[in-house]
Image 1 (cartoon, helix red, strand yellow):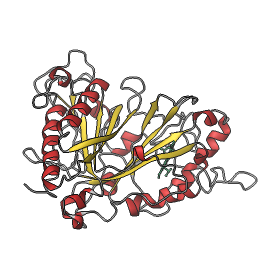
Image 2 (image 1 turned 90 degrees about the vertical axis):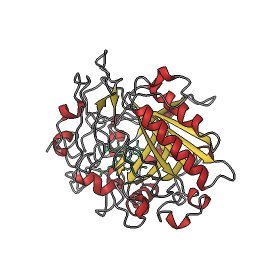
Image 3 (image 1 turned 90 degrees about the horizontal axis):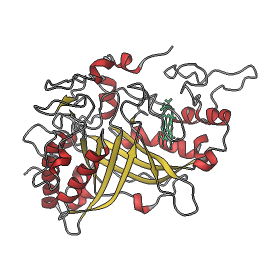
Image 4 (image 1 turned 120 degrees about the horizontal axis):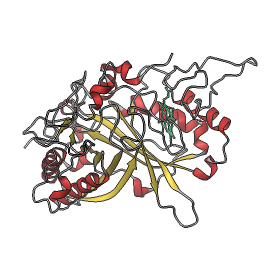
Length: 413
Ligand code: HEM
């Protein structure tokens, strides 16, 4: 059976997109879990182009923005990994979080940051979101090892990993996304500059999905291998999503409303992938590359039948295929995936430097994510062409109300 994603979530696609209705009136859609699943227009401004520049996503709410997004996530993203400066502790972290709270609240509303040297670049919020997380060592630095979630640690060594320290674990992350690359660049610059007395930028990982308006709204993105990526995923705005993603504070009360982020940088070898013919591609994924349908179906959202066999008794979806290995073997083995493509200048002698910024959100990395990742590391037909070269795990802070400061439940003033 083919099921439309927005129909399944019970949200009207038109309500989510609201194109042409971005005048002064706010346009918002409540999320079942209370998240900021909303777009509205920057205060008091109309959108002269009818495009996306004036869209805003509320910064305040029970959860940080940028995770439970509308059907079409912003097409441009940058993940900024920073380290606290030597000797920095709780006071410095508090300062970073105060500065970022202020920057993000302003920029996401279409207002310049304090003393913004380029205030013109803040005029189009373009659905900007900023999502802040903490790495494992921060808890030692601030003398709160007791507050570190149990799952917050680098992933164990995996046989497929060829990790480059250049993309390794950092103390802090600011995940920034926007509908426009200029807005994004300005936000990255602002967030990096404002905390430079307390922290240094180790890496910025930039990624992209299809631009708004280039494909039917709500269509699953295609990665650079050509596959539809993100079909089987918890649907934002549903109780199921909340169950999978949002921390309930049971283990660490300060984290209630936050979540766990895994960021893996996975290189794709385009040269060898392009030697694979269509049947090989489809069999390695367990889905038809063109339609995204499982090999046992005809439409993208058809449910895969992993027990189906052909007339020789051979499974139609190979047990070594990516989806056969990745699908949950137990109900808790689920997480929300939100990938971005990357495509950088190749090193001399290479033809490409492309891949996936593979990002997942879940309550508990060890329980939900790790069993799947370990299964894929053990066997996955896709491993022929994909190599993880970066890996990091963060505790994403809970959302805040107006007047609050990111991280205030962990580090009160
Ligand atoms: C470059 C690396 C990867 C690529 C290109 C890729 C691509 C895909 C594609 C095309 C699908 C099928 C459509 C969909 O449901 O989204 C899929 C499914 C999935 N992938 Fe990946 N993936 C990659 C890495 C990973 C990793 C590292 C994990 C987890 C550790 C993962 C977990 C999953 C899961 C859980 C599904 C859904 C399986 C199901 O049908 O239940 N993928 N992936």
